[in-house]
Length: 211
Image (cartoon, rainbow, N blue to C red; front, top):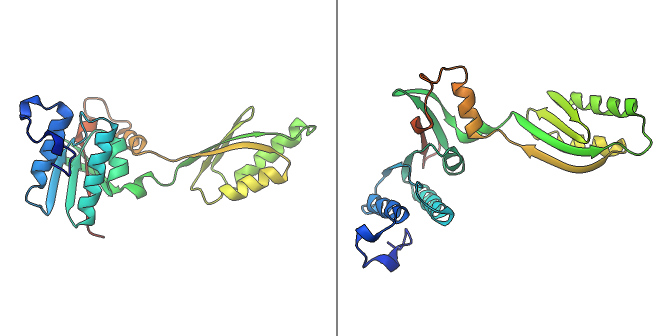
């Protein structure tokens, strides 16, 4: 009860508990015997932000203690910040699996807000922007807003120095990494709605041991 933050409600009947409190009680019940393996189905459903953070911390503590946790959830943002490995399942078959870091790394989009130095001809500024292609897979420009497609973030310092060297006023550099949700959509892309896996069919695992 202490672990899941419900010690102060120990004298209450379960019928008086809210949905979020019942979620926490279910987790407490699963952990009573200090199991080596815990299987959780939507453990953060019905929880407020504080409750979700509590459950995430409990799961991470379990990993530290050597417990393997299998988590099933359609909340892919929760999966991304909690789990080490993820598996996408459709109709009982695993269609993709891998470490979360490997799935979301790469495919980096960077949005830069920069302005040409005063007095620089438009054609010269266009040439400066075209020079960004040496580090990028693609460059899109809309006024002061520049969108770059990069394989990773290793070239960002060089790109920033390049723009400043050419006199640009750089106001913001905002990397936007590929999310697990975007990867999910990519995996099922092109499949018809009747055959595509639903988010409820996403299973992810938080493993205690190194592979």
